[in-house]
Amino acid sequence: MLMPPCAALTSAARWDESAPGTDSAMPPVAARSDAEVADLPPAGIPATTPTRSEGANEPGAKGRSAMRNVALDLGVKKIAYCEVADGEVVRRATVSEFETLESLLGPKAPPARVAIEACREAWYVHAKLTEWNNDVLLVDTTRSRQMGIGQHRRKTDRIDAEVLARSLERGGIPVAHLLSPHRQELRRQLGVRRALVETRSQYVTTTRGLVREQGKKLPSGDTRYFLDRVRKTKLDEKIQKVIEPLLATIELVNVQLAEVDRVLDRLSQMEPVVSLLTTAPGVGPIVAATFVSVIDDAKRFRRAHQVEAYLGLVASENTTGGKRRLGSITKHGNSYLRSLLVQAGWNIMRLADSDDPLRRWGHALAKRRGKRIAVVALARRLAGVLWAIWRDGTVYDTDLASRTSARGLKAAARQIENQAVALQDAAAAKHRHPTRSGHTREVTRSP
Image (cartoon, rainbow, N blue to C red; front, top):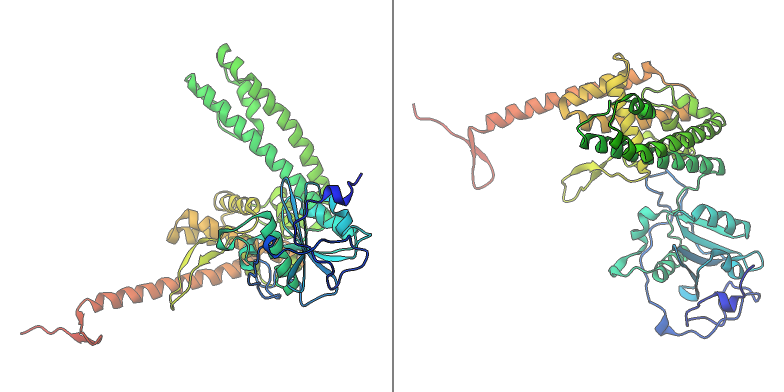
């Protein structure tokens, strides 16, 4: 049951008696007080700016619209509402429950364009606002600073909502991709599985530590069979009594994991692309399903490099003053998928067929740059391979991967050759000394 608007809304003092683009059915508003509204005119970003990688997502909102411009800052305890018209804040509210906003954004209120940041509640809020006949834009939080959020070290729910509303009216909203309903369910089940796996790993580590305190060691191996190895190990009655609660919890987690795996298997069977992705080396059902749940639509991207950048697997760059500086990977995007791809890279390096082109490419790079850098580079290349498989609806092609890897090896060979030439030139330059004018002169020796 919804609370009456007068009791549910905690409104600020600045309200307009009438606002362009609003309907007479809107609730009455109070007089405006300039002292109560923060004057924040942050600069927006171009409306055509894509999300995270060029061309990866649809462009943000463009131009002015007859619809109301509203922004919501979705907090854990409070939700900040801000409506802007003609560059002025015309309505504010703070509520504790989202359903309370039905009086302002519900089906009986004039439709509005509503901007919300991508967060835990975003899927539910987006669906509900759309059901209420509103046009909802999901904001890419990785680019919130470009809209002005957090400027001048002032960041509150109230200010953030105003910044979003102003950017929405100007057409400067970087839109994030909204997952399809089926991929949302896939992502939820993968999140549950990840939590169970991490819980089991923590309990296994704790159990091993307790056993080591008594001078014993448990045999290593697959975590799934940890309980069987513990039962077969002779332990003192005292330590057995201590670790028994942990073993009971691990056993329960194993049962829950088996159930979640069955659900994921059912969901994956509805995704033919998952089976295609598992043809790539180092990629199992979980890696493939996670890749599908994050990318959602392969056609969102035009090139493999955009996928790699979307997942934070490309090198960070600081190019200024004519100098190009490359650093470590950006680590933007979904961290879980990125970690799975890195694990897949290690599996390729260790377990893949010795003739596999990706494995050969990884080992060739490891000789020059080291294994850790090679594995991350392999994860980046694997992301591009998976995207190409999905885009083309095909399976892993070793011949095609071999040709692309050969091009990479040839480029590496050219780079090594160029480095050798540069070292020779540097050695020859040691016999020269620079003059004050910047030119060099030969140093001759007297006979």
